[in-house]
Length: 400
Image (cartoon, rainbow, N blue to C red; front, side):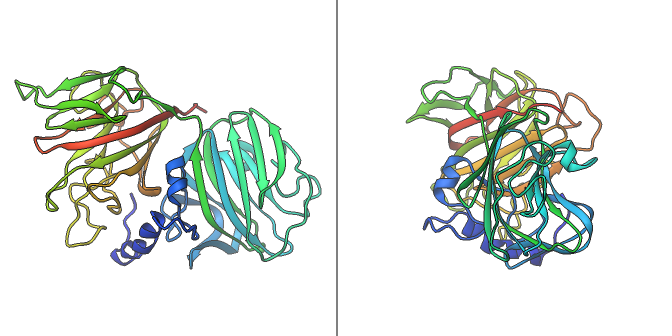
């Protein structure tokens, strides 16, 4: 993860708290409780360029909750995370001669409109007007109001694409050329463009916990403890764990995926924060193996940008969470996207981890870049462990 100054980290505070807005008001660059429960995450946090990488020579700026480009040569801004099937929402604003686009399932290498799809933003394009998939499918022509915010929505469900602008359908088409890739924002020289409210929801997630019993799961004991202490049960549709060490792992294995779940850390002592984790790409039956997405809500000096023990959402021992978002005693949402060497984590819809594992490839994620399929495990850390897990869902990502 790239280093970020303390002042910038502290400035994230307002956005993070607004993002989990219990009042239900839908302010720019935030998610409502309903959106969180439906699986939406913020692809752009409204404050920084975290999780994105400029391509080409366009000059991108962040100010007052708006992501914009108005100078430089042609270029585009690419998400570091790849998505397969998804619903995407984005607000944009251009001038009367605006010409931009949103790239879908593209690669950073090559031309994004050809390695993936370009969702057009240009009313005057003679062949592919606003809402079209350039080179693939033409949308109904419309004229939008210049210098006014518009909401572009697209659902990409396997080969089926549906596009809406300000609630009205512009395109319903099918194409199977590209199955997974990054999301991108386009800047054409001398055509200023602004974006905000960039939200995405992975599609196709299926439960891997049935809500009734632990079918499909198995317990793995610590080799250092002769008598197993971890206690797993199902309560009110939740996986409940107390004590430890130990783990509960899936019988199935997963390689590249998007995973979402809800977690609650239970503690009656405000100075103690239960420790746990979600392991993935682990070795079946091997204690605490694979990558660990940390669960630890503690932070130092009253500053959420100073996590204790890497912090909730971190890739443990690899990169710390940039901010601790959740509190003990309350369910929070976690999204993990693993695609090849790139791992990303969102907590309550805010991305806290953006990590690319550049180590030599191997079978042990603690020492090497583990790229092959493995188990998913829930961790029982120690005798003070007390957590609940619910709504565990996953979708595997296709390869390129």
